[in-house]
Length: 187
Image (cartoon, rainbow, N blue to C red; front, side):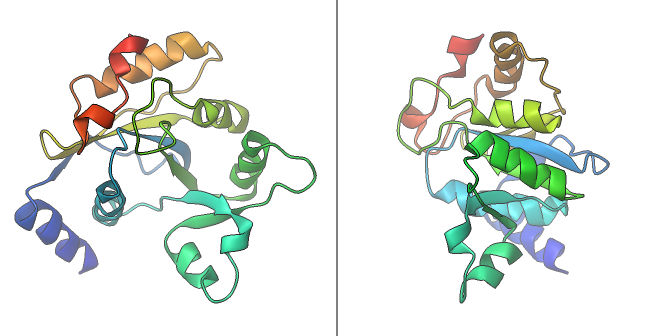
């Protein structure tokens, strides 16, 4: 029933659509979400997750997962990030992947909603370390489309791999287009 309501609001009332397919058999992945130019991207992601019907997650500092908000953050797909023991973020998140049977982590490589000239590469190294694919997901406000890409397994050649991934985002416009990362610089 929830899926029907999400589809009605997202597709019928808001005029958006989801294209592509997410392979349910891929239980662990890094979801590379671009562009991220507005707080509106958050609820689009929630609608997409509800319509797609697969578990999707994010990480946040462990301090957020305390009473009274712990249940809410976990219900929303959150996983607490524990960086004790001198773990860097990549290693700490790779450990989260190792401890779970299903973990599809959404991350915006821009790292902010403001204009950036470089992507943060943590998402890439997390996927490489955790030995999981990267699934490119475009939030295209110009076409009102969330475009799901094919799973891509990083090879270790970040320059070439980013070039391949950037192809998924050609022509995509964020809600605030001037703030979106220009993926053509990677092609």
